[in-house]
Length: 113
Image (cartoon, rainbow, N blue to C red):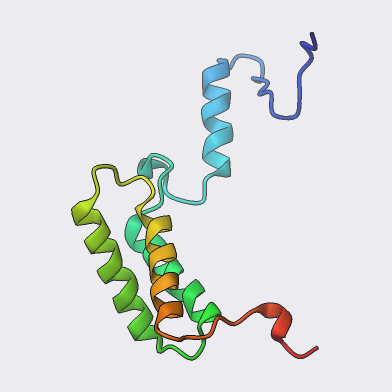
């Protein structure tokens, strides 16, 4: 059995409790505010999602994408018992809806060199 430390094993500096060192390490790695509990604000995530969908579906107006994303999210949220994966489910649903309506997905490999 290997009991050595790995790169992921936290080491507390002298005089600091390990739990404080871990908290400090996590704080530094977060991209969202510490008071968010490690979760991304849904509004921020939905805005990013609409931007990403805009790159994948460049022929669709950005305001339409934002409406679709927010509308789909709200519908899924109203029906959901658990909301931990609503943002991912929203992207999948909007993508499927756009494809069904005949929109073409832009693929980066299709870009001219």
